[in-house]
Length: 240
Image (tube, rainbow, N blue to C red; front, side, top):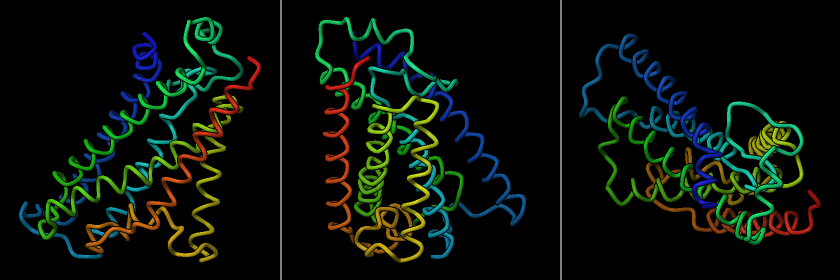
């Protein structure tokens, strides 16, 4: 039941992302073809074109991860309206004969699966609209998917954590502020290169480097685990 409830609470957000990304990708694809002529389907992009594409897409995946995160207890995240205070279903959710830990785990898993679906579907759409990568092996393409999901999940768990004590109307702005701060630290080279979890999704993707930044992925996974444990602790002690 709680799995179905989590889906009902997030399906409008998933539908919105699918409609928004489809429109943006199709408009961008049409612009490329109208501006430069029809691109041969088997023409591989220049290295610079590939870097620009994956860098731009990485921010789309981060935005999707942030918007689909939520606690599953305080607010039904992912709808069309920002919610201030407790949602009407909160007391009903808390009255269910399941632990708070199970509630947040179910909501987390559902949101992660939705995020993965968005990444996979629209990465495939981007490769269909724009020139195919061609030069990359299936292993590198699969590695790109895996690395992107792991790095984007860090921002998912950041938004999840913030959602445990912030209204949904504040969770998205706070998440985007944290994203902007991390990006600024990266651009100004304050953080060591291996802490840059943006790079494996963009210019440091296996599609370009032909290798996997294992240390960076380890940091991303550790950060996700810490944020999830912190979210569980907050939910367990929170008074609703």
